[in-house]
Image (cartoon, rainbow, N blue to C red; front, side):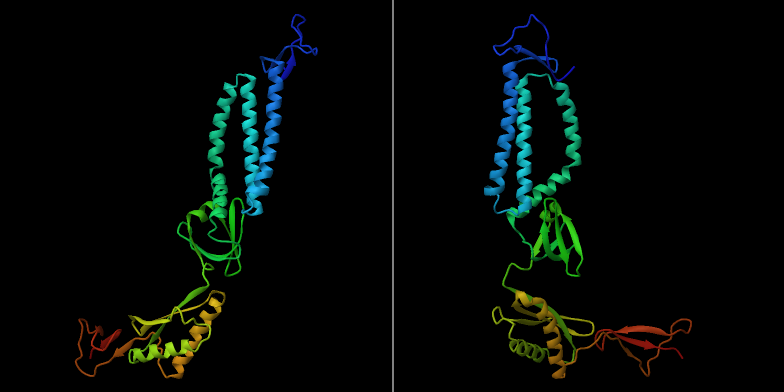
Length: 316
């Protein structure tokens, strides 16, 4: 049986244009007016969907990137078309219970299969609306994902692409990016340079801090406000560790970080301030030998001569 067939019964009445009043539609008798209404609803649905898509992509979504506007317009278009088709089926009066049952099971399966797809699509739209970063921004993605640091290349409908600082590219799903912590390094005009330098225990730390401050003050690109901070951070195994914090323009942060570490190191060398390397001092006493059981040498740790000092006592 065809989807749409005319009942060839001579007893059936006909309309004023010569067509039968009742038409067999999938086993259901439908009037000519009903068939015309179904066609009008479907055509109107396509026309409205096309118009809404044009309005959305050209006027309402101007703040979104072109790809996001196209994806949003496409989703709205197909959504309106589906609504129009369902409305046409409702007008027809057809018994579609079996079709809806099969469609329900298919919808569940498709829903589970495309869950991540729609999650990435919606997350991509939210990233465009929230604007935590833009193309060209150096960012760090932390939290939900392993740390990813690089420059944002593009945000598509389903994923975001980054150029890592080593030149490689990485693609991350939009849903993971949206749920992660996004650290944007281009959000301010200045950025702080931080590094730690260790000096020997025999050095005067106040003098060391003063030397570093004077050196930073003579560097043109180091900002006076906020003022640099140089302070003793901790007592290490082989050195007294001093933290150096200073602010520089964001555009030259990377170059200044490399320059300042080398510059401070040269200044300390010029002032005769020792920067020690990790070392262990062994103290060999001339007397007070101690023999362990079995006549073997023993190694005793001492604390009287500073950190990491060991006393080696040998047997006779």
